[in-house]
Amino acid sequence: MDAEEPQGGEQLDPELRSFDDEAPRCAFCDAPATSECRRCGRVYCDAHGEVLCDECMSPASALPSPVVYRGSLVALVLAVGVALWLLIAPPRLPGEGRPAEAATQTTGPAISVGSATPLPTASATGTPAASPTTTATPTPSGGQQTYTVQSGDSLSTIAQRYNVTVDDLKRANNLTSDTIQVGQKLVIPAR
Image 1: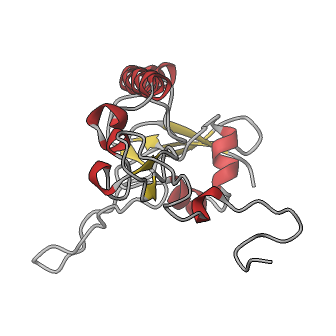
Image 2: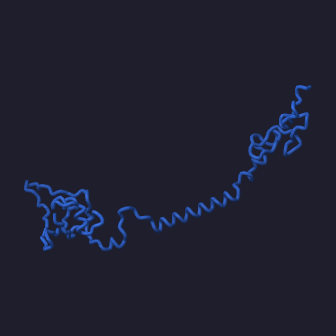
């Protein structure tokens, strides 16, 4: 028995044959093929490619398929639509009021909890500066008082002054945020 013949009726792989036994031919010419294209599987000779065959290296084969091209156009149109929608109607952030709420608020500088407010300082002559006056007037509604907001006030300072919580102040005055205005009248709930 010959050493090169397969045993048990096995067929030799065509790529393992020598060039004398009908070697595969280049897909582009009649020369013996030396390589197989990794992309399309064609066999080719050294004159028709290096890593890929000449057909796979042509600019026409580098174009995206029509499905990829149309998909990218659809994605671009959708992105432009979303960008325009966000410019026209931007989403509201938490804490931003609605336009109807803004119309009902009084004008004046806004004061919120934790905001920095200037404190009265002593004058150059050594006499203390006048402190803001508080206007608390008792009302006949069972121990509740009203207070007129002064410059430098915040809900937390007013709550501390009258020994109530900020939440109680907000609830008694139907406030949804911590913002108050100078001159605004607040109901001080009973303790």
